[in-house]
Length: 500
Ligand code: AHR
Image (cartoon, rainbow, N blue to C red; front, side, top):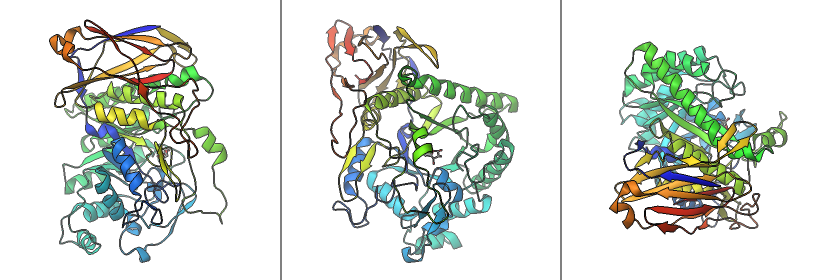
């Protein structure tokens, strides 16, 4: 197999918004409790946050972190999570059939964000609540002082406003599983009223209206059209959520990026259609605020908690163990989003710790990197500046779900400030390496001066994973690069993700 790509400094797709490298912490399973927060842990700081986890989150390089849900937010009363801890009420969480203690809330989470150096992306509850509660939270979080709720925040220990800039108007309201699930028109009206009221306070807030929970939802396409028709001038982003899993058809699984690409193109087309109909000159971008590999079918069958007497606190939920094959697909999803950097200007890897996460922890024990940690950390560290189209020529392979698909997918980035190019590539061939030729001729003399190296993630055992017993089983390795004049040659291993 072979593939060829051309680095062209002027082939700009768009500027990469740092928010593309965001993530997500939901009050779900052990994401918060026994995840980021474990007061009894040997590495815990004075506030009870695990410093080993803080270090890994920093290493991963996440920008904005969406909080506190997810499905959780659609039944959440934010007031429960602020104020003196001993007065915070435990509550039933109907989304995950658990008990929320509210030991960690808005103030504690912001303090943790300050430690990891990430921005807060806050979701409001539009499932069981509405405009007033969203406004109350906004006043509490963002207003400087002198009003009932801003003074309450100050009394609760935070003099400076949280100054949250980006807000999600509910979560997955198209999903029948969502508390308060509604039709696109109903939700669109509520989102419009909420957005209008929030922007009456601060017109510069960035607001995300809920798009589809996946591109296979029966309402996909029409949901976006209807909600944007209600909200177009009041919001800035529409969300996309997508999870992929290997259901036994490896070839199609490796091509998951094709589905994500189609998803993004369809939502962009729909948003631009609404723009045209309204005669608006405003552009709506995509917040891909849930994306990952998720063995959803396993969760449906195994993890469901039931019974009116059974509401555990922070049980092990959605603790998927990621393989090398998962990490390759994961890396390809980042490539897909970079290829749409002009319109995907915010994204959240769902999620961050323990729950479908790149970082795992054991209570009282270690924290470690899953296979998916590596493509994210490398792409976030080096995929900065502008995304470049690479004019890729590649052989194809036949898939069950998507027909013929290119064996190699790739994107490049150029970071002017760091004086660096990066190429991210996946080889989807399951049986053979693919020779990748990178043509640098368009870079001229600058191309000849580049220092070049490559790292790849692959393994003869596609099921290899990092676990508590063997936390460093999988890691990227150096890949030789052969330089011949203006070209670079690499041999991408079968089922691999590579950074050059
Ligand atoms: O990330 C896990 C769940 O997936 C979220 O709570 C929900 O929004 C989505 O269905």
